[in-house]
Length: 360
Ligand code: PHE
Image (cartoon, rainbow, N blue to C red; front, side, top):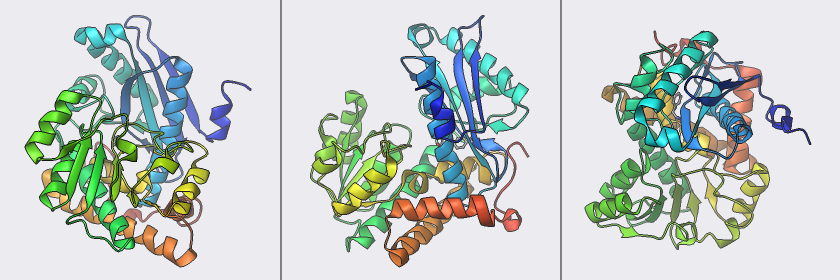
């Protein structure tokens, strides 16, 4: 099979590969679907085995962004960029910053067809460097806000999932896998609302510090997925819901911040979860808060935008739950159908006063 078969399978509109000789930058920018507007999506910085793996991940994550914008009714297309992290980039900050600037210059060549912001491995400091080379990046001033907005939406999704199982957040046991830019806010928010929180992170020190702060249980990252709980909130990396991991789950609800939680084939995993009596609120529904804040609230989100961001996620979650209940399908199928309907039939309401182009 051709190593580019994923471009067809994911139905990407564009895939750009970037190799900058001077800095050693290796990156992929994937644009999935611009039916609703120009492409937006975070930039991820991570280690990968090959440029092909970088491109494939960018493509999959770009598709998720198309679904995310469509399901939440924002006039943007799905895009995502991935920068390959390596030894040299991890060791040498000046080199990493030179790569970020080279990447920014590449974004200028795309002329706003792709606008970006924070994601896994890219925070406000890295976006600030990018901004020195391009206008097509947001998330410098809203330091930590995108993470808070995402966490608030995930909490709303968790509450909806619990409600559908006849449970309340107060007293519920929630396992938060990954306590980084989003998971830590989520754990604090849940604990403040009376949930019994258990956390894990591959960074053992940061997990231990947060567990002490919250009086939360500390779980082993290797086994936290199958811990007994009411809710599992994957907030680390993708592909955690597989044909191996699902039968071992001991929770009633899965809802978290990580992108691409379902390993392919996604529909099969969603059905497997449903057969096990587990409600899965799809990642692109639950984790839309950051995208809404960064693209839907003016040039970039402000603290005052947090409440309406949360309301927007709550409204989408409500629509998805209603559709799933009415048609007897999984929440995943309901969310994909809703997104597809906006992409192919209805479009989104640009006059809603909620959406502004990046940089306006
Ligand atoms: N990276 C985040 C996400 O996956 C937030 C983001 C959205 C950043 C859009 C930039 C643009 O949703």
